[in-house]
Image (cartoon, rainbow, N blue to C red; front, side, top):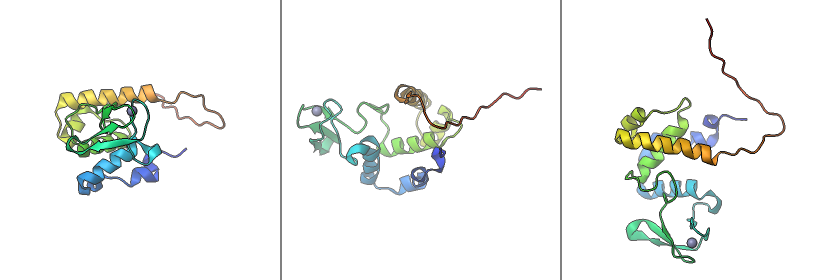
Length: 152
Ligand SMILES: [Zn+2]
């Protein structure tokens, strides 16, 4: 098993690259992360239909089948945050690359958000990890690393 941080996908994105992206490119990156199975094309979260049209004035989509209106953050931990899409992408990168975890105070400094918002978002991200974790039993050869506490 390869460490996530050494994967080629993790190496391709950096804060500098995110800062250099246009707003449209940031949105495209997030759409690709949100809807990878359709290559970034929006999918209705209510009926899983991919026939949607864009409501450009609100940066939202409307399903042509059920009429549901949604955005790129609908149904995610970022739903109803006031963060820009660029900040969401930066936050995701910082959080995923923090091998030993990320504190709310660090995020506050790195993203420039308030402490309460970063604290709540980190809890939502951790909760999302737990609720979406694949708990299928592993098979084949499995390696684990145990960290034992130091004793005097
Ligand atoms: Zn729908």
